[in-house]
Image (cartoon, rainbow, N blue to C red; front, side, top):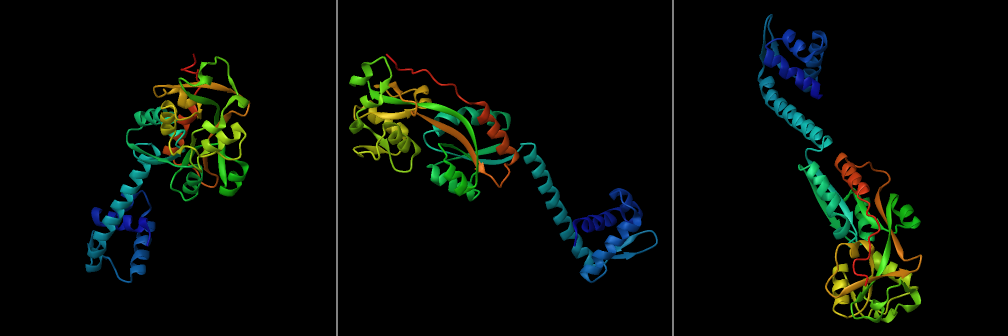
Length: 305
């Protein structure tokens, strides 16, 4: 049973004969008649009684007509929905982001996208990199914003990775800390490792902190789950932390100052990641474009003194 057969059948019923139905469907009458015969043959019983100038529904035809109209109506509705999605009038896009990026980078591009396409819903999934990669592979997100994706990650998850930008990592200090009074960048040797406040295992920023400070593992004197909490701990005088430049640009808690780190490795790479084998939806493609257009410039240190 084909959709065109149901459409031809309904057209014959609505127009009252095969000639007018063929004209309405823009098809030759013999072709339309043959498709109706094929439908009747498949169903095993006649649907129409053919009279010289009109047609009449059989009992089976009347039963089929109701279902045919419903199927065609749902098909047309689906086609309209897909057209609206392709024109970004409706739909949904799911984007993943690591917690040390989401609150600082996402608001601007998402706001611009929703302003241009108010009928599309955006869902943001915040999680650690490993979880985001699993969600990408499972189709639970279309693309993700992540940091320092390795060659091993690309092969393991079959990822397409496009670098957005690189940003410096800064040292966050309590205002009264001895290093806060220095105007010059802080050398690695001067960073007191025992005072570090770090994020928990699985966070990219934790690994980046250990790499920059050239230590194998943190003492775990104080660790937390969110960068906002880390900064609050620093502001309370409970330690020092390594934070991305975008966190410094968006405003720091009272009592926190930042200083640049004198080390080439004190940076991270922010990338857009998607599954290599799957094309993005029109909405995801457009949202991705907004992210690529919103690459931030290296911010000045707002608390340097």
